[in-house]
Every structure is written in structure tokens, then in C-alpha cells.
Length: 366
Image (tube, rainbow, N blue to C red):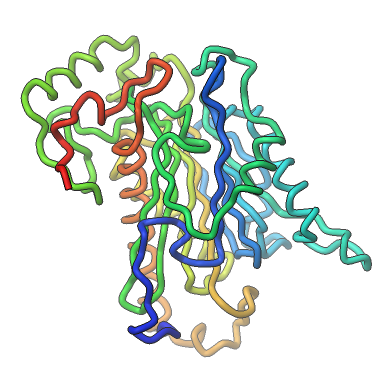
């Protein structure tokens, strides 16, 4: 069994952020004016990160995901891009590549140290036209600016970055994060951009399907009525499979789970796959034909990121799987929580009404 290399006295408090794992920076850039309602979020891994991916939705928009297959050459990624703009928004990854190239970060391809190719997988959500103009969508400048603004301690959630133009189950969507520390001392965290056909909110209770980190109570009767009345007025309430067939736009939930335990590329792929269980707990229904649900799995563990099969940990047939099971289960939990927080922390924008505005009585004052 791998144990934490930190004593209890040195363990820092978690902020409920993807950056709690360390060695990851998160940056956002968005525009919300004059026909704009979209943005880009960048996960920078300055020291590189082993990565995997699992794509479950029927309408994904992705870039550089095939290279994350365990049998392929590339071992480390230098950033992950999550963006609005549908397929057009994939252009934001080019700006992140330019930023990384300037700093000399990337896969070396020649004797000259400046000859690098940054590895920047990406996934996008559909938010075209939500700000008023269809042609207003992220380009390479969004990615460059988001990368430049990336911070090693980030707690921005709600209508930020790629979550600005998101819509979920008829309500205002957004970006959420969550983290936890498992028994071994390792940290598992998640970031989710929720732009789903399905809903995070149970229409019967008017509370989230999944337990949230934000203290909540059952909304008062008038708020419950307001929420149900609002959803009934939409052309596509999108809270059921039947309604999803007439949804007025395409959708997607995208994001990442991360840990500071060293994982192999195959284990990162499994990590991403199990995180989809958390998505399905928090968003109902999930993984439909109009969704492009994509989750990346990242390992930023210390030391050599390319693991050797001769390491003692890989020769432990009991301890290693048990530890991995704990990480996988925690990944599903924090991704579900991140999806829930994305909706709870969102604010109304451009005619998209937030849960917070419809059910203010659900929030317990601190």
C-alpha cells in the first residue's frame, strides 16, 4: 500500500478546488457583454501529468483524445482545455499551445530545446448564440488569456470560464469544483462544466439529486412552485428523456478528475471512466445522444511520471487494487459534487435563470 509522504502536521486544509492536488493551475477567460456569453477554462500542468479520458456522450466535441489511449506514445499532457463554442471553441487550445511554447513546455521533437509540441487535449460544450450572437465564440485568444491567468490556488466557480454560457436542465449551468482526502493521505479533486440535457435538480423535492457541499434545506412552497412553473414555460424543460428529444440546443458535461497519487496511463483512463458514475448520479439523465459528456483523468503524483512495472507497488496484488478502488470511488464522489456545485453557484444570465434565484430559500445562511 502506498502511504502519504506527508506528516499529519503538514497536511493543508482542502479548499474544495481541483488545485488541491497540487501541480495543477486553473485559469479562466470569458466574455459577457454585447452579444457574448461564453468562455474558456484551462487546466495547466507545468510539470506534466499522466492523463486518460473517457467519452460517453453521443455528440462529443474533442481534440487530441486518441493520443490518451493507453497503447499510444504520449505519456504526459501539458494542459487540458474546456471551452464553450462547440466545435469552433476547440480553436482555444491553439492559444494554450502558443502560451506553453513560449515557456518551452511541450513534447521535445528535436535537439534544440525550443523545439517542443505542447500536448493539449480539449473538450467543448455547446453554448452558441446564448449571448445573442451566433458568431461570438472562443478563439485562440481565449485559450492564451486563460492560460496566462491560471493560478495554483483557484476557487472560482459558477459562471466563470467555460461555465459562463452553460445551461443545465433548463436552468443556468456553470462550473463547479470539489475535493477530498482519502485514508492514504492522497487528494482526489474534480472540476465540472455542466451544460446538460438532464437536470441536477430533482423536480419532486426541488433539491439536487446528489448531496451538496453547500448547506441546503427544502425550499419553501412558493419557491418550489416558482421553479416548477419556470420549467413548465420552457420550450424544452429537458428534465426527462422524452423532453430531451425536443431540446432546443446541443449539450454536454465536461471536466476532469485529478489525484496526487501516481497512476499509470491505463489507471488514469479507468479513473476518468468511473468518474462518469458520479456524473450519472448528479445529472439525470446523462450520456444521451445530444450530450458530449467527456471526462479527463489526471495524475500529478510526485517523482517520475512514467511508472516502471518493477516498482514494488505494482507487485502488490492486494494493496495496489485496494488503493486504486479508493481513488476511483472518491473520483466519482467529487465529480458528482462538482456537478452539483456548478448549478448551485451559478447566477442568472442572458435570460437563463439560476436555481439560486428561483429557490433562494433552499440556501442556509451561514
